[in-house]
Structures are given as C-alpha cells and as structure tokens.
Image (cartoon, rainbow, N blue to C red; front, side):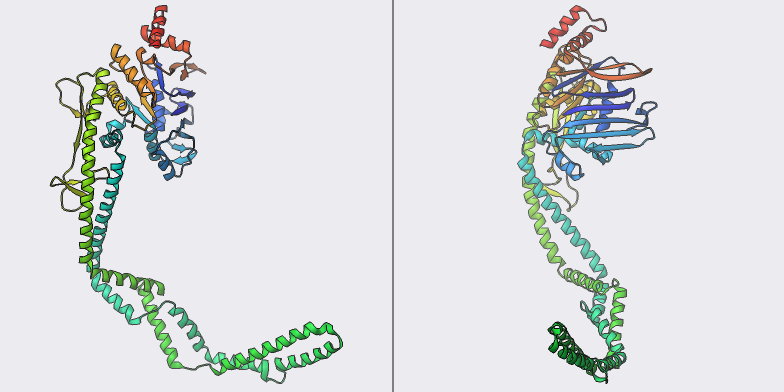
Length: 567
C-alpha cells in the first residue's frame, strides 16, 4: 500500500505530506481546487512523462516521493533484484523534475531509468480514469488477467517449459542451417587453411622451446670460451679458486686444533670447497658437450620462420594458430554430418511440437471455461454499477501460422502460432448500449464510464489481482443516486482486499470512506497553493453534507450526511 505521499514544488503545490490508510481513501474538493494535480503527481511515480511546466514557479525542481509498505508481491522481488535494488519492508520511490528539463528517478536510493520506474509502478499501482495508465485497456494484458482469474498456474508452467524446449530446438536448427551455409561457402578456404597448418604441424609450446635452443646454438662459440675460462678460474689455473680454498681449509684446520670456535667456519669452508668442485665438473661437462651444427641451426631458423608465417596469417600467436586449426577442423567435421544433425534436430522439434500442442490445448480448454465465469461476474458488476444493458465477451482466438518453420503447433489439423502463454489471443469486448454490438474494450468507453467498467472488472478479478493499490480518478462522472451507492459499495468491497484511492463528487461514495481527504486551494505566502489534508470525523460529516446540499451546509444536510455515513 501507499503509506506516504510527499509532493514539493509541483504545480500549485508548495509542499504537502499525506499519510494514506488501508482500505478506501476518498479525495474530494471543489472543481479547480487541484484534485487532478494530485493524480498527475502520482502518475510521475508510475513512470509517466514529465514536463518542466510542472515545476512551481521560482523553484529549481519538483519532487514527488512515495513510501510503499510492501506486501508479498511475486512479480516485484525478481524485478528489484534484476535491477540491483535493495528490498525490504518498504519501498521508497522518488522522482525529481528540474526546471531545466532533467528528470531523475530513485528506488530505495538507487538511481533508475524512467522505464524501470514504469515497470515497478505497473506492479504497485493501477490507475484508472482520465489517464492512460490502465492495464485493462491494454489488450496484451487480458490473457494475464484471465489466467490469474482461472488459477491454473500448474498448466501454465508445464506449457512454458514445453514452449522453451521447442524454441530452443528451433534456434538450434537455425544455427545448424546458418553454419551449414557458412561452412559450405568457406569449405575450400577452410580445407586450404587446414592443409597449410598441417603441413607445418605446430605443437603447443614448440616456439618457446625452439627459441631457447636456437639461442644456445647461435652462441656456441661464446659458450665454449666462457665455460673454458670459468673452468680455468675455478680449477685449472695456478691460483685457481679450488686451490685457494684447499689452502684456506688447511689453515682453518690448524686454527680449529687450537680453538674449537673455528669449528663452524671450517664446516662452511669444506661445503664451499665441495660446491666449487661440483661447479667445475658441471662446467667441464657442459663445455665438452657444446655442439657446433650449422645445418641444425639453419633448420631451426627455417622452422621458426614457418611458424612466424602461420602466426601472421592466423592470429598473431601460436596458440591462436592451434585454436583456429581446431575450430575449422570441427566445422569441416560437422559439415560432413550436417544432414544427420539436422534430421536429428527436426525429429526433436516434431516431438516437442506434439507435447507443446497438447499442453496448449489443455490451456485453451481451461481459458474457455474461465471466460464464461468471468463474463457472468463482470455483467453482474456492470448491472450493479448502472450499465444494465451491457454485453461483455471474452474472445479467445488463435493465429494461423504462415510457413513451415517457427514456433507453431498443430491443433485440430491447423497450424497455429505458439507463444510464451500458449496459442491463444485473448481480448475483452464490451457494449454498454442496448442494441449495439460488442467492440474492443479500449474503443468503447471513456472518462467515468471507463472507470465503472474497470471497477466491474477489478471487482471480478479482486481475488486474483495482486496489484496492491488501485486509483480511480473521477469514477462518478455521469453517475448519481442509486448507481452512486452501488459504485460506493463496489469500491468498499474492493478496498477489503486492496488499498483504494478514489476521487469523487458523490456523497454516496464519500460517505463510505475509511479515510477522507480534502483538496483545498488558497493563498499561502502571497501565492495560490493547493493542499491535501485528512479530515477529522466532524469535518467528514461537513464535507459529505456539502456534497449533498452545496456550499451552504444546513442542519438537515448534516443529519442526512450522518445518516448516509451510517449505512
């Protein structure tokens, strides 16, 4: 529910904070007082377009903020999660419109786009009346309302799984066909490339090993000279390191014989002597094995050159060359088995179509049963609301599939288009005048009549509709007397399962309020300003009396108001 609404510097509003209640919230006020401004401000929270004209003169920006107490809404949690918005016990939605034309939106202090705000608004609020935020006037939503009313979620989930399987297989077939055409077009090129790479037959890590070995062969002369000189320093020269260490060891042995303190040093020197001996042996062996092989050197240089050519043509690295070879090898292997792969996929598609068709058929049966129930309920509601001669029809059709491909299924020997919700297209049709044929709901009514139609539908769908807040703007246009009482009772009943905010001029509706708010226009700081305030019980009686008898409220009018409110 909408717990708090804060509006600042919006049109004639300087700053107001309104705390709405559960149940039926009624808004009344004189014509021109600014009731429509309140609805327009609420529309901003639902992602409607904004204009700089709404910013109050002299202000830098207009602000509209709503605090919603969140019920369990299955559609809302994944929506918030998907947009990385923190969720908790309440949701704070904020919209700012600057005088320079910039618009900023926040949900729980997370910046979001207007489109995201609209998504969230569609889950939280349904606004009916003089605005176009009316989900029931969008034919694409009718199938969802019918399904929610019917409560056959299990069938919907079974069908959705079958449909996802079918579309995945169709996509796989399309991928195979595209790959087949592409590979056939490039078959000769791929075969040439594969032969060229295979002629060199590179191996992983080969280049690094070749370069390391080549470096040794290219520096063979330097290696011979350096290792010979090192051996001489360590072991062969008159004052070789090894001889010097032997002499030093003998001196330390003498010192150690006199003082045991030289024991550790003697051990370290003996270790050094052994290390030098081993190093000298390694250098001598290395020197003896140095190879001068010009032929092998040329062979290695040639090999590296061929690898460099492949790298230049196929990705810049040997790893890229090998990856390309694997890829074209796999595609050429696939090309030889395309017919078998496509046939296998087509068989799987046909099996999936049969399963999808059977589940779609069951859904259609359920929808037709549900359509009869909702039709009866809506007609009863419209009669209570003063449209006794109305006709209501839920039309369930399917679209014939063109072509032999795509997401279609065969039902009753006909190919029909399948979609995420089945094979059915659902649209509500209505006639509110005797003798007139039914027409699409969106084209029939306007203004207050739209609101009454919406009220009848919402009353029928109340048990299944999960939208927590319903707003009815001027629901009483063209309504009076007994019909007004019926409208009020329908709103009151609807308010037992939803929070309802309704703007009205009728005392019969206002008298049933759980909370009553008055829109007033006056002068504030030398400027015209609109405000919205909740009325006390005494003020409620006076307001209902004013709606009954006009501006001059009499004692008789007050008594009539009390009597009306007591019903």
